[in-house]
Length: 478
View 1 (cartoon, rainbow, N blue to C red):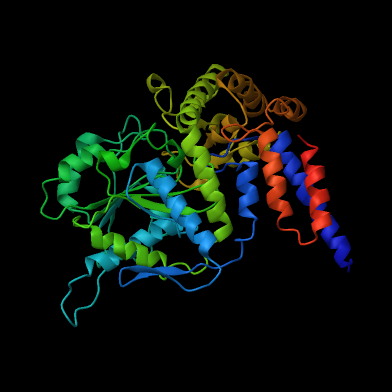
View 2 (cartoon, rainbow, N blue to C red):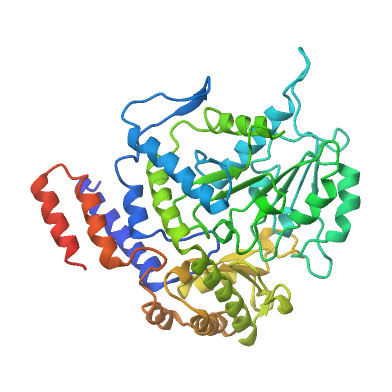
């Protein structure tokens, strides 16, 4: 067995190679990922990482159960303030550590909320019926019974299946909602909870239409929008809270270029009929779902929120322009692009292509990875299973941050078509092209960020002489 030092060195060399491959030699097009900025990364690994700051509201006051938390308490309050500004809302819960946990926290809160006021001795019940997007049509896993909805919705005793119905889609374009079919479907099923949002996501959700239909109901459904994939496009793409949604959830590391966490947001003033739902959601965040809620990533999220609020409009505009340009170029280069060409194929950061004529999606995705173009295979609405995927799902958000504009995506589309259609080896050309896009934007430039990062890292080094040398060496990079 190798020595401790040998293991450490071997692992560090592997990490270095992987960092170089992903950050300097490849085009990262997976729509559910992003690279945080240098300062976000520095925050993430700072002292709060590994600390605890459990807290809950008791008798109207926020009570913390650990000492030494003044700094991170203020960070959480400031992050709530920044994200309230981003969503233009009043209430933000930041303790879920993923988008899926954020959804689960809401589902738990919903079950507690609907059982408030039940008679003494009466058993608690689950949600009677939930409406969401079909997983096979792009719905997000975390809002499915096999995902975070597990155990929170009643079963049909006749079939043994959960009482879940799906939002209707157009037959001629299964990526768009069928608004005309909504009134009858809603009236027939009377869902208690409606979950909008998808993971294969190129068009708006029918929030306004549903809100208009149910506004006169005696007991209208709670409307929740899982914006995990499009959170960073909030406002430019869709504004669910203004459209009539009660709750927005999401993960903070996809189009929202922060650390890997989750968020729940909404407007719940004291006079709101859903105020108790918000109280139940907070209670399910802690102590219902978390203890340590990953304080390093919370600090990083605050830094990312500063960046997003400062560059929001500029970033969102470029992402959506790049996606449309990329889709158009792919079609020009001979690849079938999903969606409606009249709409530019997409309204988000995502671009969907059909590759079945050239091989299975899984095989094509691996072929692209071998040529340093990183995507993920995707089951399209007419595919039987995910393992028989005929599509590829891509997102432009990460490479937009590294400086790519519309014209740059045309050359990338050509390289991608070479791999997909002609099975050409373009790895060296792709590596050379990526060297044009190494400087991250929509954050502090490197010349300003590196000295700050050096100081943050040095503060974690106990030896003052070593820390000083460390800062000097890092600052030489600027």
